Length: 358
Image 1 (cartoon, rainbow, N blue to C red):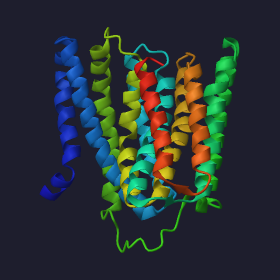
Image 2: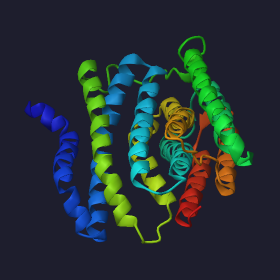
Image 3: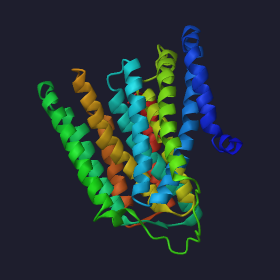
Image 4: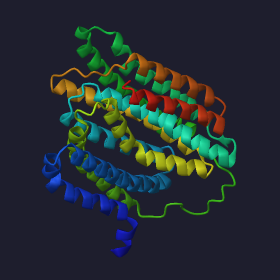
């Protein structure tokens, strides 16, 4: 037992914060805006701690099942966390564009933040880093199709056509992802793997029990959901009247959901393994759009509401620019620090625009 406590200290710390946060939730809210904001920051840190353990156990499972299944476990876990936090935060906030802004922020964070940071760090240490070029090409065209159909086209439709198109989007995204998963795990599975000859790896990098890791992975995601319940209330109260753009809350949600992916991608890049980075960064972007959009659209229809999912003009330009740069950078099967820098500049532009409220 002491060994488990030592290994899972971050998870236990997050659980302790949750046990303290729930009974003291009303105390923090009644103590004023400053106290609510401090509480929200503490809860965000606790969620990140829990996410770090979710990342570790996802890596254990990924190593045991191999690619592309391993990356699927991590990206789907991140999407589940994102959807849980989104549903909870949406319930406690009046921002009509929170879902749209969160999905957009997640794509920017995954494709520019994660891919850019990993390519820069890996490139500075190892130079050019190879990966399977088919994976990058496949992901980019899938992301462009998914985000174009579900988040760009709706901006050009009249209000009376949105309900019918929303139903069409749900069906199309589910079918598209189902076909993608089938091909990714069967006849085109080799698109998403790369053989690293001479890597020197003779044993598992993340030894551990599959059953234990699966239980702790699910438990960690559930814990994040509990923490998000209180975090949503305190963050809303803490930011009320401050003039902070609503998109900032979306950036926070996207960062919390992506924190396991960031750690895993950076570790892979520093170990000169770029294929997992490509799978994580682009796979997470695809999963975010193709899974989160239909889930949130379906929830909105169930409640008799119309989801504001269409990207703004600035967001559309940033998404298309990101995909264009990614298509050029990922065309040759090798990444380097220069390519990583271009993505990181786009990420910096995204943060600047978010700070300005776009």
